[in-house]
Figure 1 (cartoon, helix red, strand yellow):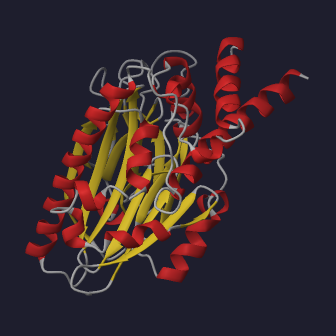
Figure 2 (spheres, helix red, strand yellow):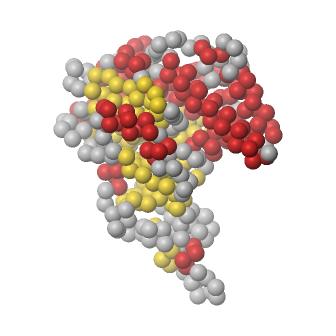
Figure 3 (cartoon, helix red, strand yellow):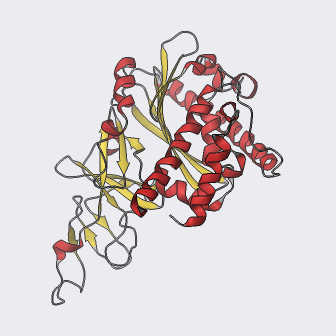
Length: 367
């Protein structure tokens, strides 16, 4: 960690931990800082468990999904033996991707020079290189990453030696067991990618509170759920769980989030696997995958997905106008309303704790 980055992190911590700052947002100067952004993308997103897809999208051998985890391109595939495996999505020859998009196939192929790999990551063919003296095919397999399936959701972590998902986030187990969260039998039918004009922390603030739902989403999200219930969320570490009721009293709607970047929902109509992909200090790509609940009417599931998409467009407008104003530098931080915005304080503290841990690690290595 460069000295300049350490200085900037210390400044943010000083601002956020100052007397009276508990009732305020993350310092706004930290939303546009390119050095902080690069640190967060590498440390928070590049070394964390992230939800990629429904497990049903990887049910058959050869099915694969691709993603960016922080700065690392990855691919996760179902092997012929039925096992899920993940790899850095870079050919060992010259770094071209071995899977350019989600899909299905018997192998992973680099189209640049034709090197091919099995679904287990082993190098199968390296045209013209195989005959070179000393070339060891076994030494040039794809670089592994960690993969885990949890209640119908596939997660990945770029660290091949990462702690197990449920060890890293025990709240998933406790909250998931309590509410019966499970997306295993949901039927995927649509995906959505939307570029949001704001820092990922600003998007997180928008997503973890529904204080704005009555005014901004009255005809969209509030038509599907009793959104006032979302203020009663519970936390365990980086995991947040909130519950509501589907419109008409037709059952529970549960939302599970892991800060940073993972957003999961399940109810009697629809399930969602969502992920934040930070692109720049002022842009965050949002990936949402939709699936119909086992007994849901397919047409109603589509309608719910349409309403979610419209809600996200409304959020996009919020972030666009908010970001323009915050770029003026006239506000140091926002005021948090106790109750409906308590979750913003918890999400802010997750980031600040990450900063403090990184500084401590740096100082331990330097001593």
